[in-house]
Image 1 (cartoon, one colour):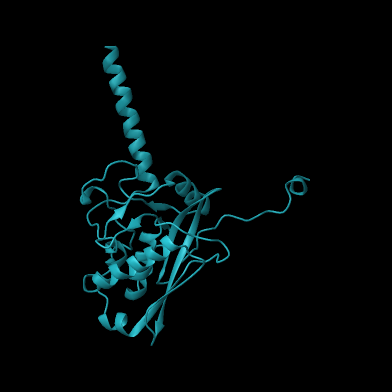
Image 2: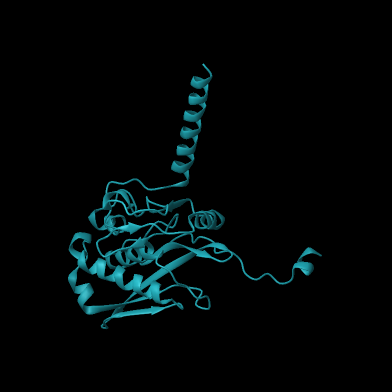
Amino acid sequence: MLSVLRGQERGRPERSRQTLPAGVATGLAWTESGGDVLYVEASLLKGQSGLKLTGQLGKVMKESARAALSYVWAHAEELGIEPRQLRDNGVHIHVPAGAVPKDGPSAGVALVTALASLYCGVPVSAETAMTGEITLSGLVLRVGGIKEKVLAARRAGVKKVVLPRDKRAGPARPAGERACRVGHHPGRARRGRAARDAAGARQRPEVTYESRKRERRNSSRKRQRQKGENRR
């Protein structure tokens, strides 16, 4: 009876994929109805050149894709990518759900990670989703809709979310204070570090559900101790 009154279901939230092949990364997007999980897929075009974009991407998102490719090209040696792969092959980037328009800069981290994963042949963890704007110098800038994106990741069954360290609006901070590390497979060889180093931010811990809960517990205990001292 309830299903009759509500009518046909408009759509179901994206579920996390169990495994990801090399060249695919999990991103997070803000929508009018909340947040959503989106997958960035990259594929080599052997014998061709240039960048091909599909998935009904907006102008800003296309610029993010070009910036991500430029960053990977500029840091190919550092990431362990063979120059011949860049010279002899084009690349196709697709974001599924082509009937849905997509735009905004927050997919930059996922774009860089997908490209680095593709060229290095190293899959990205399927349990990690990410959001953040990328720059040519490798910084990950703050983006909006964090609450909606984290809730979307939770609905999709994603266990870990990587966020820009500076998530609040305000004046710009030094570069070292507003970058984050991109999720990676621990214990891999140098080529396995490509996804982690793609954003150019090293030695900074990931932001996960567990760490956020731990920070809240610690701050709550601190406030309780302060209240006890004030009463004395």
